[in-house]
Image (tube, rainbow, N blue to C red; front, top):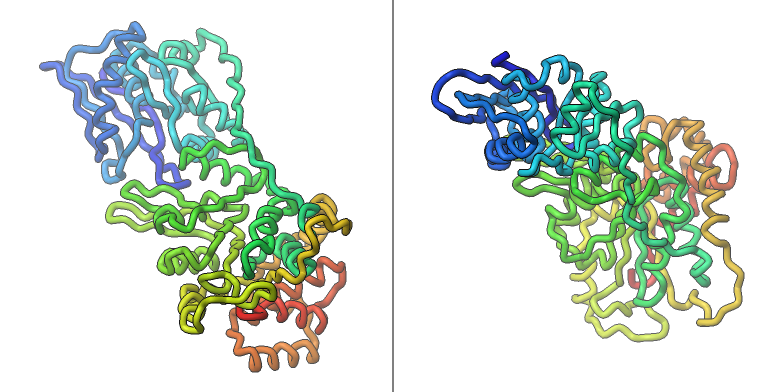
Length: 496
């Protein structure tokens, strides 16, 4: 047989469009041509495939060898097409039966000695192949990560020779290579936070309803400690969220630690591309790696305003679209924003123990680094005051993260049973129905919007927070007391 087709998958974000690797072996002067919009890494596969076949004790055919990656208008990058090209050559040269690759998709990089090397983005490819009802041949290391895909039929191989034996049915599958995830940093426990009842309250509300949170106050009041406690009180992710989180980490080359929600804390010097994703070959950024978890921005005002404003659309839609000349890629970015900042450049505006050295103009310029539309999308905004911090060796008993997490899980279950999602994601059209507001609550909200100059978006977010307060209490409709508490968390006190 001088013609063969092997199925594979390209990589476009979490999408993995199908690619047909067509191999034609014709008589003529020896040549090896790869067509079908291949990028540099794909064109270089010719030398890797040739060496791998020879070192795996196969014959490299003499003749005119043409490899077409179809569809031709889809850009192909990376080294994932090494394995399907090699298998296509073996089928075209009758060294491997065509039936061996029927119903099988192949992805993997080849080493010069014939070994199979790990690749990025294999989880997305396995998800797509499983949906299409096909098995996937891939390297051992990649297969160990892809076992998170439910129902996946994997054919793992350590090298080209052993993989071909598996495809022929002449060998038993190897033992599963155990995937050792990187150890996850232990998050802080709320028992370590002394005092700060208001901050602890809003942290619980943020966890229960999926709300965004801004902590403002002088240095040393525990803002970063509070933020690091949030992952410990969040409810566990559902299986679909776990799969997407692992797929995003796989695309970026970040090894997932476990099935816990991610906690990403980029430095304020991070570029816009690092924060939201991008590059010449688009990769997911911090907001996508925080999908299903927490994005913590410490020293919020030190981030470039341009980078912060790029968060506005993902905060609303839960995804980010990266457009390039040849491609348009969407990454999920349903994260929970938690930010901390000082009220002024010196950090001590409004502090009762230390005086501020900044001029009014400096404080105003510092506050202007955050745009109004961005602040409008942050549901909970509270002042963390040093005066509420007890002495260093306080003996007050405080609730641990485990106790608070139990209440949070109960509240989230009420929301999911009622509306199928958390309150922070509740559509505006359903707010009135879910909150069951009476005339008293509506009049209170209208008056607050007028006096506090709240936008319609801010009013809706206050209602969502009020709904979360009611869910934590286990009550039914939203009351005026719930709305007043939610409104109190929209206005920073002191100089903030």
